[in-house]
Length: 160
Image 1 (cartoon, rainbow, N blue to C red):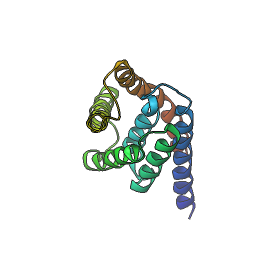
Image 2 (cartoon, one colour):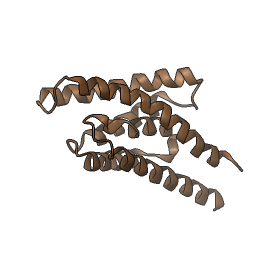
Image 3 (tube, helix red, strand yellow):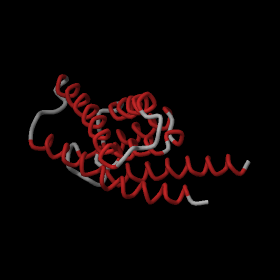
Image 4 (cartoon, helix red, strand yellow):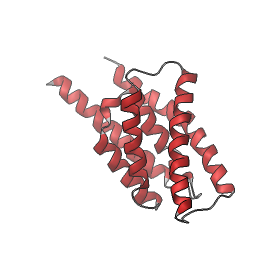
């Protein structure tokens, strides 16, 4: 029973911090910066502790991200569910080393980001401008911030 409560507490804590990251990133007013904290957060959660965030959690976080970042509703949810699927297929272990983790993050995040950008470009919801390149830089920078924060959080979980 104690193990279940511990797991439930961990899931609730992870979900609460992910929602907090969504709220914090909604303070960034630059168009396209809405994946700054949440995309690397979802990636790191699924890499370190994949059982703490399921498909429903990914969908809800994406929906909250759409609402608070005022995006096209459904884009983030689709991205996060795809990310969950990709990570469940490709990650059956904890991360290798830091560079391996960074390369894996860049592969997943840039693929998803560029895929959603192309879809939005096809429907004339966005254009290629300096904001696009700034968004890519922020997406990469977010990894280092979230990596530090989530390691602190998971460090608490791993203590007995």
